[in-house]
Length: 136
Image 1 (tube, rainbow, N blue to C red):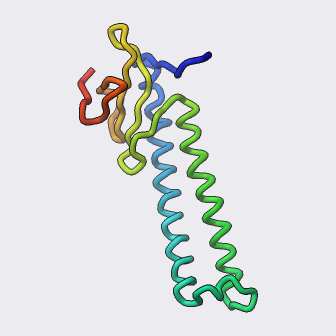
Image 2: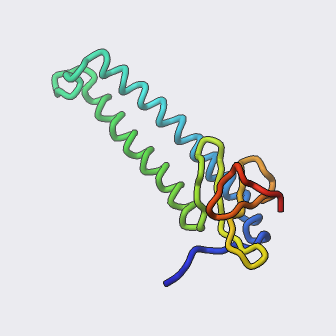
């Protein structure tokens, strides 16, 4: 059985630009999702359940918005999956918080990174979280 991807500090720091880019992508997708949901909600408020009827003047727009939402959600999940494939555990999408496995003094721990940090500067035990971050 293969265990989790364990990073050295140097390997983890090499990832930081890609992590920043991934969270920027998530921000963009989240904004687009929010806008599409607002538009769809407005159509539903105007037309009620008739928006699902072919006779509704905004039926095609409603279908297009549903397709857009599906596509955006898939893209959002793809970005999250790409982070997971690198061994990252996303703790908070909004703040851009994630952990990577690391060995410190012979013990498996998490390197803890928060968006905006130029490099990994903290760690915590695997059974604790951000509140227990300790400087490297």
